[in-house]
Amino acid sequence: MLTSTEYATLTALDIARHVTQGALSAREIVSAALARLSEHDRVLRAFTAVWPEQALRRASEVDDQVTRGVVLPLAGVPIGVKATEGPGSFQNRRLVAAGCVPVGATSVPRGRHGWQTYGHTDRGPTLNPLHPEWSPGGSSAGSAAAVAAGLVPVASGSDGAGSVRIPAAWCGVFGYKTTNGLLPARDRAGLNCPGALTRTPQDAAAYLEAIAPAHARTVGASVPRATWSATLGFANTDPEVADVARRAARRLADAGLLSLADAPDLVLDDPAAAWSGLRSGEPVGEDVSATIRTNAHRLRKHFARADFIVTPTTPHPPHGHDGPGARMSVALTWAFNVSGHPAVSLPAGTTSRGEPVGLQLIARPHGDATLLNLACRAYTTSEWH
Image (tube, rainbow, N blue to C red):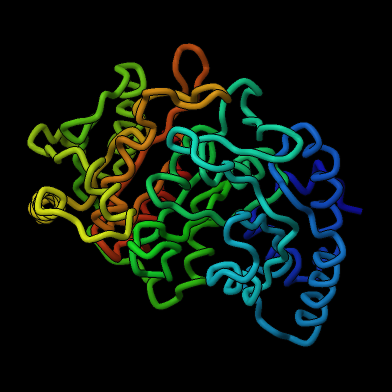
């Protein structure tokens, strides 16, 4: 019998392989997931609702499909579903069709509070598995916490300003924001893109294959050129956060995965007003349009000579549960919601106080598969770990 502790060590691809090969049943996997959730979420508070009956019923359906020879690339994989999406969202329906089993809804912020980098449940705030006094980030707070704590190997998220990448950075997991328009957006402005929180980029690549197989083919240079910027020309990034992320980027270069150069000329206009103007749904003024055009031009020019941009994911470490205050947690992420570029956050290391730091990689529009391929290669190198 699979224990909840053993279950927590399995990636999504591990689970799918075991279920497909008959070593474990989907029902065994989901039972272990529900047991672990019951053991740990009373304190963690990553879930706002749990669906044991529906999950076990779906697991039995997966087992029946596997027995009949139906190919399910993510057979039996328990997933958390971001509460503001629900199981009926496009990406969650695609994941279920690939064999995933939703086990519950993951927490999000309540109302407006700073830049929504926290999580709320009726039992209290969602805790960060790395330290209970830290926010898990947001708005995909519960999804990141659930993956980091081993409750599920994959959880759906959505990223309108960094809402997948920020919690990934602060919970020490992998976060993937899709290219704008690759999947149906969750807002009228097209800023809020579906994405996923996973333990490994390999699982994120499997997620992309399941939801958008036509976009999962990898192309690109064998040793791509990447440029480093700690601020994008405007962010107030903590020096220690920048240093931790820069060392992680250097490890990728030392492993031969990319050619890294500084990018002092990569100077974007602060996208705050542009993002807010687009998100409002109202016609934007010339100042907003000018910022969007200027940044788009500068990014096109930059990507004409570089394959990736590399930055810290956030300009500062996790804040407490009282919110970010005046700090802009989204400063390094939301420019790419406006521009539409795909981006990921990888765990980069920690500050001297043990606070997690994320490394953000940004690729050209529709370079999702190439971006995930680089992240997968990073995770298989001893230099990265």
